[in-house]
Image 1: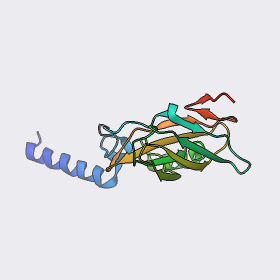
Image 2: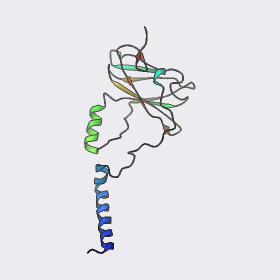
Image 3: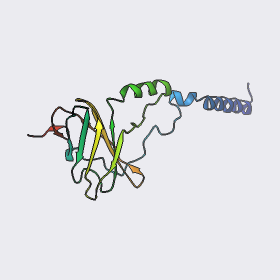
Image 4: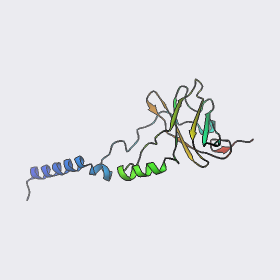
Length: 158
């Protein structure tokens, strides 16, 4: 029968080895940032956003009407469709399961929560929009680029 102190030393040594090799992080047993903290900042309001179709060089203008985000918020926009290949490679090599998107562009909302921003995108691309204020980040929303002017994912009557 083994001495209990020796068993504790072996467990401690094995845990130290696994932590230093990063194996527990890869297996998902231990992780940092895998669970998001509670969010008090609201998500942007999709119904108050107008998404223009891509122009001839694939530039899409997204206009947030007053109230789309909080006044003075930093608005982040990312094209998730164009970045899927890179994200897939990153997750293959780094095991990233809950990676935040890399935002392509950002702007600051005016005093009414309105903004105007452009991003490179094509029809059917998914655009992710988020806001940040006073160091807090909101949940993101997803918009789909259409071949006609849309608001919050629905076509706007012409």
